[in-house]
Length: 170
Image (tube, rainbow, N blue to C red; front, side, top):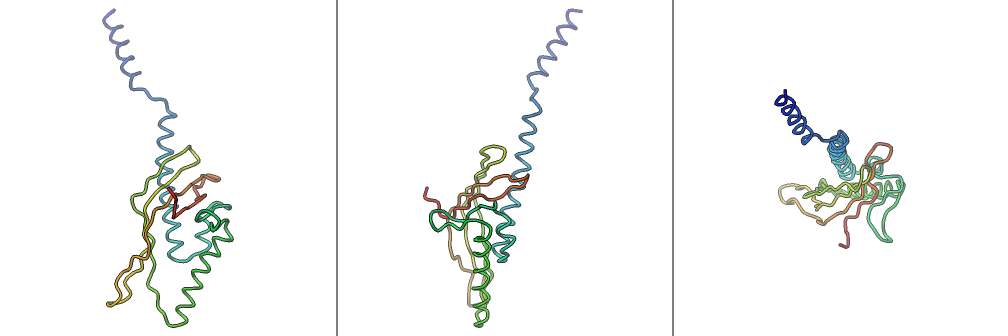
């Protein structure tokens, strides 16, 4: 009987060594889901920018969200929409003059996402702005490259961009 009791105690001890509270698993699951949601948010941001969709672009930001930093930062949905509407207008003006602009693509690489807490995250990455090939004599062109730092927040269950700085000082 002592051997059976000792075996049961040993088995319970081994089982307890591998026990992890459910909260830890829930945090890991939430973080994995949040990573997918943030990846989707950043894809929506990029597509809205490349398609010059002002409403979709502003919708990726918090109502007081901002693009850029310092005194020239563009803040709030109305200003963000205007920034994209102005870009669309410049494209339309160029086309009215017979200029066909090649498609513009924004790309992100080597991104690193860090969760500050369950409702705040920071993403850093490198980026490129590329113009597509515009015929056989006009090759693809890299227009700009840089690094960005984004502050992301969960608002009413949805991840949004609080600040997007594409020219950080650090």
